[in-house]
Amino acid sequence: MDPIPKSEYYYANKIALIAMKALQDVMGKNGMNAILNMAHLPQFIDHYPPDNLEREFNFSDFSALNLALEEMYGPRGGRGLALRAGRATFADSLRNFGALAGAGDLAFKVLPLPAKMRIGIPAMARIFSQISDQYSTVVEKENEFIYTIHRCPVCWGRSNVDKPVCFIAVGLLQEGLKWLSGGMEFRVNESKCVAMNDLVCEFVIQRVPIG
Image (cartoon, rainbow, N blue to C red; front, side, top):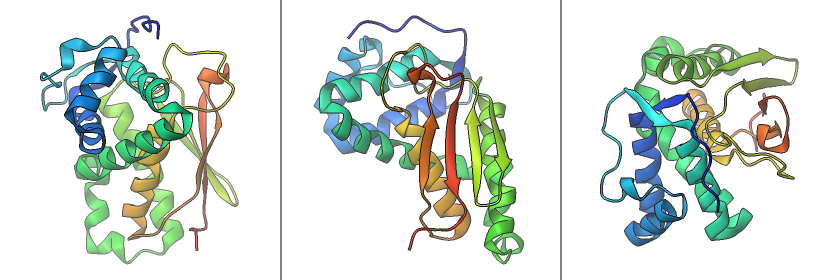
């Protein structure tokens, strides 16, 4: 695969670190090293990003990791790994951030589900605006929430793809919704993707949980 040109936007080191650890848990050390080599990121072999919130991990490097997953495991295999990495990234870190800190409190837990979603989904979007150059917005509709990433690190620098590719983001949203709702699963579909030459990456979150 060709290198993805560097961007001027950055993720917090901690997010990249947790995503890499999650991928390594699934693929093993040798598999992860192969992915890093394929992504033109050999500098991260045995040297993952530091565990801090400095904005130092380039969007293009995050996108290259995602592309390398697809190249090595195929679209379906790469998708499954990316979903797991996204879920782990939320489970291991994001629920402890300020914007969601109150969501573990009893006062939040006793709210009805619609109120939890109305508060929690925009809070998730705010976290990324706070700790990275990813800019996200949320619009509430009658049967769904539209979660839009206006600068997406997952597919940065890619184009002319025929299907959405931001499965790390889908997994992250799925796990966030599971945590907010107290264990329910929700359908999250990416309806627009910058890699498909759309202007934004857009995710449709169904209000009603699955099953």
